[in-house]
Image (spheres, rainbow, N blue to C red):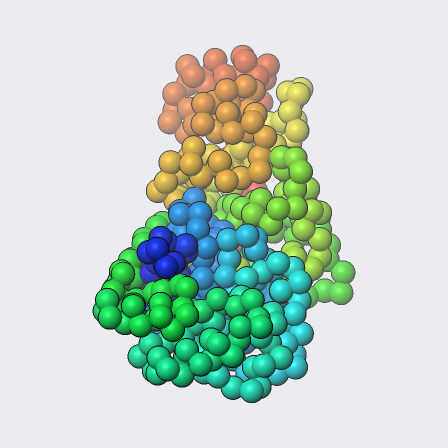
Length: 400
């Protein structure tokens, strides 16, 4: 399965790209899909901010549409404010509840933009917290826009002209006081495609039940997340991007504790909404879980001096490359994992590397390599085989 996003550059007065507006698409045709706005935003955020290494904004600002309910739920706080511009959609209602949410986002350092704005006195209380106002040049008379820009000189607001299609319109917008520009005159939206991994639906339902409880049981949540490679990968990407860690994560329990109950609930809710209608995982997911459990069992039942949680993680992520159709080295550089785990995954170095090499060789019936790895790990081939059978039974029980 693939995910798609359309992006259109946003330029400054010197025609330098300062960011991109990201638009959700559900296929290679560059058209908006027939889905609700909330679902489109959730899937865009989940697929392109949590799922893969694909950098849709080239480290520049990402302008993302947020419907009313997403703003009230403070969904933007799931993501780093440094490279995100929160676009408040034109159909949002300027209610007291929305104002509270906007004030909260502004205080946390998020850049806020009013999209396709139509001047209205009801929006006046919001203006002190707004960074950018976007006017549609197809519907907003240039003179009216110019007057409103002058009216807002007391605020620290920059104005963005949308749908600029000619050089003349670009010059008129500059003269009116616009500092940012977007439209076909510069570039049509560009389609980006990448491989997506989707979480198991049963795991989503179970997680939703857990986060709905008055008090979150982190052990139970960890159990469900580690049964699904998509959720596990998204979790570590999220923890890393939220700038709340100061050292590498070595277990999923540690990642959950870093998050805390509030952000964990937000994370699971976002992923659940984004993938409520997606297909079941392919056989690669089952194999990744099998490898993870096998690594954990071998470490637990032998004298290898390794942490079971680290072994589980190595096994789980050993198939990220075929799952995402992207180089493993690029994928894991975005994960807050230790050097030992990264070297085990990419170079098969250290005891963790020998562990995953043994499993790969066992799957290929390359018995000489299996025997060599077992000697390095100081375990017998009989012990290895027993753990393999036990982990296979465990995976079958999960599947049922």
